[in-house]
Amino acid sequence: MHAHKISRSITRWVDLQVSPERAFEFLRDPLNWPSWAVVNLKSVKPGTGEWYETETRQGRGQLKILAGQPWGLLDHVWKDPQASWTVPARVIPNGGGATFMMTFFQPPVMDVQAFDAASRELDTELNKLKEILER
Image (cartoon, rainbow, N blue to C red; front, side):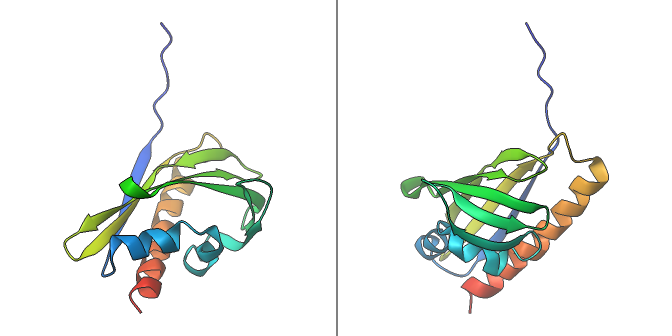
């Protein structure tokens, strides 16, 4: 039996005063992501198949959304010059609004300090998402 190393993880969320359907429809479209993922994502354009071509602060990358509407699933796969990873994400009903949450696992190429900094930057992006959706 082989031991598998467990990655460090963080989960961040934002409560939104919009319907789960509105949040899901906005987030399932990668072309909307540069408007709220303002720290890491500079641009998105359609790519090949289900992939979107991205320009990130790390350089060119790719994004693929693995959406499942009945369950609010918005998992996505990132590929950039540093690494490739899957981010579990979900929109869930919360009273008259919604909560959007994402879990990030620390990639091997990222040290603890960089991962902690990235988690703080994610808070900035989620606050921007809230601002956009609640306008």
